[in-house]
Image 1 (cartoon, rainbow, N blue to C red):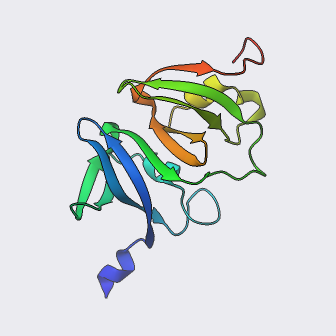
Image 2 (tube, helix red, strand yellow):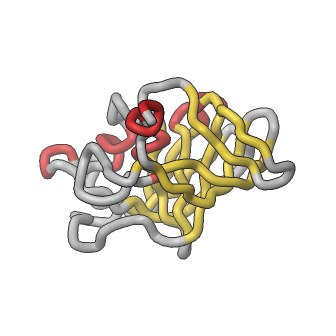
Amino acid sequence: MESELLKVPKVPRAVTFWVHPEGRVVGSIFLRKQSVHHAGLETPLEALNHPEPFIVFQRENPEQLRFYNRKSVIRVEYEGRDYDVATAIKPLSCQLALMDGSCFSGTIHEPLHPNRARLLDYLNKQDDQFIKLHVDNNTVLINKNYIIHVFVDELIDNDQ
């Protein structure tokens, strides 16, 4: 009974991890039913950006529970666009080249402070290890440590 009181209510979210050096791993991460940052369910980006070094992952095949070191996770992919159109200030288009040879072209839809709304500001956020990129109808969370360079698709001004 007491152990039930100590559990944090969570729900599984199907994702694909790309892990160094293991490669592609299919399964689920667990999201808090209530985010500490906003009303509603925790987002996968919030779960990946926790300060703890390990994240719980339920692997599909073979079925097993694993604890992955966040620093070894290159990227996380899942279906659907994970953003609120009402809060996104201005989509930032870009292309990312990663150390594993993969390249992604997409948009970033994050509500950024007006004085820090440049792509460079988003990439340099100190507390976040992962950034969120929307590619077609999917969401990709990318570990900033594996990014070689970012190419800005539409350079609005020289401050980008």
